[in-house]
Length: 90
Image 1 (cartoon, rainbow, N blue to C red):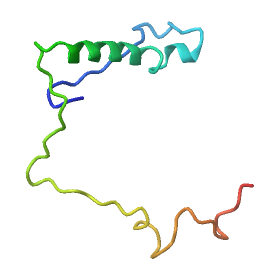
Image 2: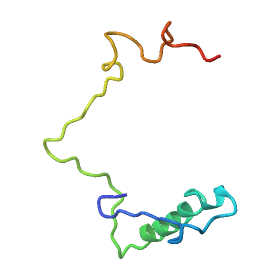
Image 3: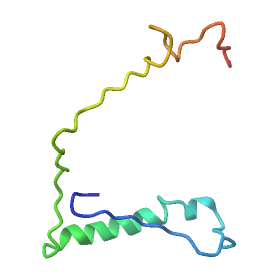
């Protein structure tokens, strides 16, 4: 994804009865990723297309958001710490 282009690749079939003989053959990294990589390499290699590789410009008035993972728990507690209420699964 760039400020000038959004690309997605979907591999599959319209008919739900179509199946791959192995799961790894049909998953995105095996089927869609090589297609995406080939396409994007061609796009960036073609200077007549003029697709930028720059970052998105942050709109004015949009700030950063800090998320405090502990905020939704009781004051000062660690949600990942084991307590008497949280049994150990060892």
